[in-house]
Image 1 (cartoon, helix red, strand yellow):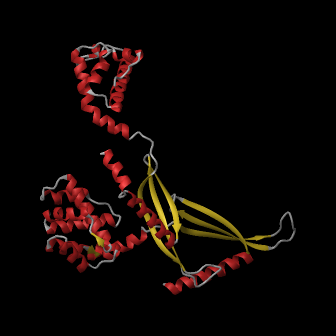
Image 2 (cartoon, rainbow over the protein chains, first blue to last red):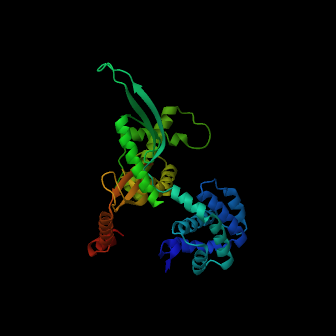
Image 3 (cartoon, one colour):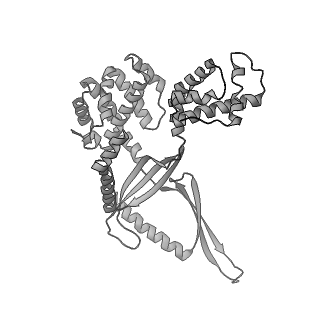
Length: 199
Length: 173
């Protein structure tokens, strides 16, 4: 059976197995646990003690608590990844055996946070390097050891590049003459115009 | 097979009978350290070679301990053998192993030299684990090479189903 929230593939066996664990928790508590898991997926701190308190009624072992968090994490992030709407997710989860109230509670939490989740996932996507900032300075060369009267402007640029592969920021300094700088600027403006046609 | 202990190791283990019972050991630090080293050598070598009970008993016979101590050592060996073997198995040199894979699909639309292009590319970041070190390799490929790569990997997985591999796997079990 193919599920949209699994990317049109079969549902993984372990997810299927943990659906029955989710059914053991009351639907109200499940919605609160979802809120915690969503916090973790959005990059905020997860409050594990709250989850432990919420699952204590269902008398879950510590392994089951972790499995619950893992399966909710998977369902919510995978649904966001494949841009599944909340009704489809609810019906697919019910097909897997999750009771109706549990599924609708889970999907309500999902719906509230779907776009923030997708924004977060977009931000976490693979990037190799990123331009942090650019600093510039314009100098005027009066004279040099080679020529007495130079009288030319010079542009200093420093690109602060974040290296996503190895981490850390590197500063790349460049100096350009006025002509070279004009060429660079016009090429970049052409690239910007192309980007604007796509937005 | 029998475990052969050198004279030095026999001397180190010689402190064991004296150390029997709870309470303070009236022996100097060096002797205790040698004793511990001797004992751990005895246990790791026996576990490594998977020596049978009888062979173990015969090997420690040369130390001339009391029967009670021999029985104690044998029990210690049998109880901890499995765990020692699992720890020893992790000490073998390892190649970097797969941790996770991040990927991205891009399309190049234009460059400084050429506009109106359509050039898809897949960028991969392969996360590897090697002895608790995490490294990452960045790779880039076009879709046809990626398909070829997938085909080759599926062929490799398919090898496990051939008669030749099945026979070997059966014999190993």
